[in-house]
Image (cartoon, one colour):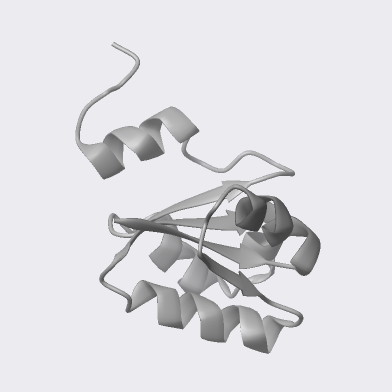
Length: 100
């Protein structure tokens, strides 16, 4: 299972430095949609990390798809908190509560 990160070049830089190989720079909304669609179809990706501001820019239908996605589990970081905590997303992804 791999981690994919989509966002602007500043957002993905830290993930690249941490060794994440699947990083995609989205310079505009069209590229953002293309990368998200590509990652959703990639069976090797288990976690997709997005900037929460990018998540808010997406059409509501795509946001809903991402929020309900189990594989890959989508984590929006930065800015406002999503409907689901990171703990809940990890629990849904892994199947167990790691904090217990």
